[in-house]
Length: 77
Image (cartoon, rainbow, N blue to C red; front, side, top):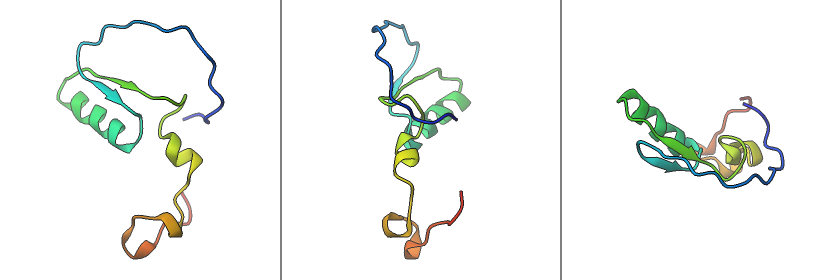
């Protein structure tokens, strides 16, 4: 995975997709795409940022915003 840098403006492209279009390359979008792929269903993920899981890269989990039980988060990734 690369880093999220400022995105460049590119001309709009039209693409035919033979399957569902998934909005967002966060945890749910990636999981949905993987599940569809396991069942042989092609899909396309559309992401507003130029990297996957941009929220994870821009807002790391800390103990104060963790959803883990007892608000404990891993110290190292």
